[in-house]
Amino acid sequence: MMRISSIINGEEYKDETRKSLEVKNPYNQEVVAKMALAKEEDLHEAIDVSFSTFHDTMKEMPAHKRADILRKAADLLEERENDFAQIISREAGKPIKFSRGEVQRSVQVLRFASEQAKDINGEVIPMDAAIGGQGRLGFTKRMPLGVVAAITPFNFPLNLSLHKLAPAIAAGNTIVFKPAEKTPVSAYMLVKLFHEAGLPVGALNLVLGLGEELGDPLVEHDKVHKVTFTGSLPVGRRIREKAGFKKVTLELGSNSPNILFEDADVNEVVTDLVKGAFAFSGQVCISAQRIYVHRSLLESFLAEYKSQTEDLTIGDPLDEHTDFGPMITEEAAERAKTWIDDAVKNGAKIETGGEQNGTLLTPTIMTNVKSDMKIIADEVFAPIVSIIPFDTEQEVVQAANDSIYGLQAGVFTKDINRAFRVADQIEMGGVWINEISTYRQDNHPYGGVKQSGIGREGVKYAIEDMTEMKFYGVKLK
Ligand SMILES: NC(=O)c1ccc[n+]([C@@H]2O[C@H](COP(=O)([O-])OP(=O)(O)OC[C@H]3O[C@@H](n4cnc5c(N)ncnc54)[C@H](O)[C@@H]3O)[C@@H](O)[C@H]2O)c1
Ligand SMILES: O=C[C@H](O)CS(=O)(=O)O
Image 1: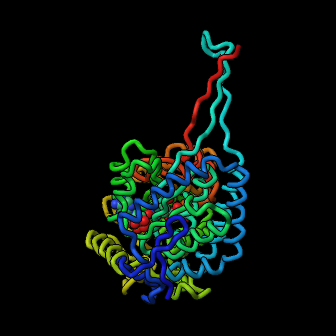
Image 2: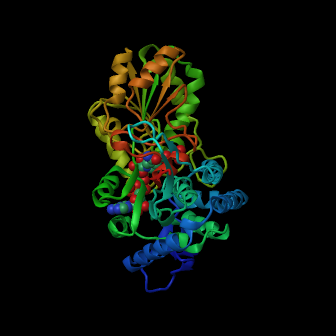
Image 3: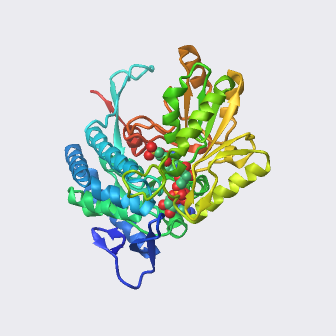
């Protein structure tokens, strides 16, 4: 069994005086690792080291050097795809084919960041635009911020961590990295990989511990300049309250809608929407949670959707054939099951699935749902999808927007005018036309409106949020 700990200034903290936590495989409860928990004093040390390394080293490091480190990290990660994929599957319970996909995306994120590190630009400001401006030169530069606190969730433990670490390094910041307590092993391996790639050890400090203990002191600390968080809405709200004047990026939850108009091609879209709802047991923030189907397509869509869902291979995440595995914990599966039961009590129908045993909740399709049921109104973050008929464009746009969330949506139609009209009306950070809500390419701007969050990721956009614009003016003689 592996023993892992925080890594501060390149040093590990494994001594027996620290409390520890077992990291368990959600599929079979195998102990994957034992994690030594950081104390608050360790956190303060990590922040101090990050602060001094920013001033001594990172803020002066040239862009080509930061780009080299990121490129080297991408190459190392590519070589170690299998090691990282195996560990993600063991600590998160993610089917191995999706874990491999996550590692491949993570390599891309590092390459995007390596390229972007050399392209962080300011702009020239026209100084003859206002009376009296003539004879002056004005321009902007983008400056690194200092210490970035990166707090990440369990569901994409590698890629969503890299969406914070890679832009922070590209911009010349230093980082205190607090990954999810359920999935710390890939984070530990990633920090070591960055150090091996040549990143100064004090520029990336890993703090392993409980969010409820370390969260506030990290977010409130004066030497932290920015907090970038991906996770749940309640924690996001708390961070927003505690962060004061710091810059904050919040990537939170969603109950993503997908809309199939009457001219959508059912055969083309069903397979993608099955994957979009059930990949990693629905524990994806842009999972297809609500599928609105034009009433004329309902019968054929539901029959095909149900048949493909029932064909999913359920099993051990480490088996190459597995499509569908456990949820992260038994409590998460039980919570989702109570939402199904509540909906059924109020008239909803289970078309398939709905059976829970330990961490497993079978892929569940619901119909006859109402907008105030939790499985519609809240983020399910579980393998539960609702199929909802509609008649008119106006009605479906209203239903899709009837949510506190607004992350990403999918709209399926052959009518280009309708596609753009609906996309304009949908209140989301991103809308896909003829693609599922669950699709994301790692360089497009990504983030939510409403209570899905604040700010944008997608390397270039995260860099913008991890730098400060500074104005320089010159009065010419
Ligand atoms: N929008 C996105 O890009 C995106 C991506 C992935 C996941 N998510 C969301 O994440 C959630 C699931 O992930 P999770 O269960 O790991 O989320 P979570 O909010 O429980 O935990 C996320 C991180 O926050 C830490 N944390 C807990 N309490 C804290 C506190 N008081 N202060 C600071 N940090 C604290 C945790 O230790 C963990 O590292 C879902 O809601 C999902 O939609 C959003
Ligand atoms: O869970 C939400 C993630 O943002 C999905 S993805 O990793 O960006 O595809």
